[in-house]
Image 1 (spheres, rainbow, N blue to C red):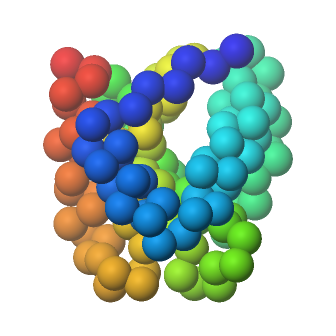
Image 2 (cartoon, rainbow, N blue to C red; image 1 turned 120 degrees about the vertical axis):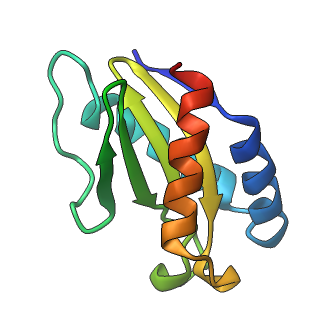
Image 3 (cartoon, one colour; image 1 turned 90 degrees about the vertical axis):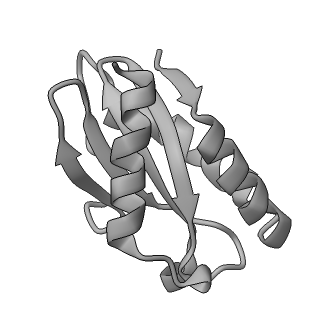
Length: 121
């Protein structure tokens, strides 16, 4: 069983997204269920399509990933993106954004990398 941790920045970002996309909570819960298979520390199985799940960076302490979250009623190119870190059986949700907000991918990745040091340092 995986342990999910939520950085305060992620909680702030996801709350803002939830005000616009009420179904985002169901999307996150579905993603967490898939993580139990995809990131199983003993026997991982690929259950998330590579087009939706992207390894962004491998650090000494953990790997940083980005998922294009499936949300009902939202076009896939506008789906919220969630950056998270994986270390063993721990998954830390770091930050979230949507292309509707025209976010800068490089800035979000830099933010995710800086936030991961809060957790794994």
